[in-house]
Figure 1 (tube, one colour):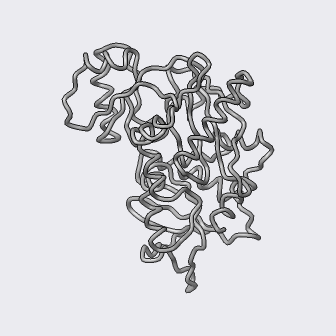
Figure 2: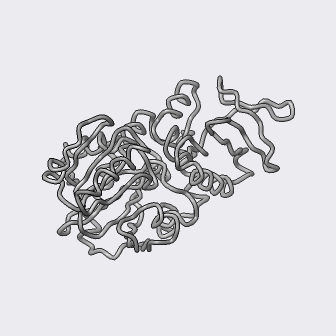
Length: 316
């Protein structure tokens, strides 16, 4: 838990929830903080033990502790973008996320959209910019229209995202997005019901969880709406059976196309009854209030069962 991005505190909350729900009789578990300034394992008394990066081990009171499996609860860099998982792959430690390449692909919004579009999955119209590119506002508006969304290409928890209603709001929004990433995405506004669909590996099978409808008090589902109570998350979503069947099929198709494993949460917006894919999150929030645990609860899956299932899949 932890990480190097703006999402560090959210990750620490997720990691603590996982730790508190694991069966201590079944697992000898430790919290490991991966932070810019230190990598440390913590015991229940909050004592810190430095991690040996050569093999991801640590020494506690003279005993060498090594791991069979890592539960990845790091949102953003380096847990969600594949970097840390490539390291685990090199040193031979199993983990609960998808393979490092799939994690890197899905963390990159532009590349993910490029892949799923090839399979006929509907998305918003989009433009990509790299830092230093010439910005032609008229060209942007001609392609994506107004309002439009400006977002970092590789960031989570809605950090750096803006909704521009007028031409003069686009440049400040671009600057805000560039503070999070050197690559940004500008997308057309899709007006419709927004839903979040959890797709997970559960007891050896791919499972689509009950769908959550997102109703935000704010202009869009931003950080404040996600984490400060400015939204309603309704599970199951108030959509028709036809819409439910359609988005479940597409969410599972996206999971398969991208060749991922472990936990995922995909976002869709319905336009004229058809789901349009927005993005996929491969390390979704795991606090009791987070969307994926809400969906698991609606499916009759406890957090203990949810977390242990992904660990068992990783170990197998």
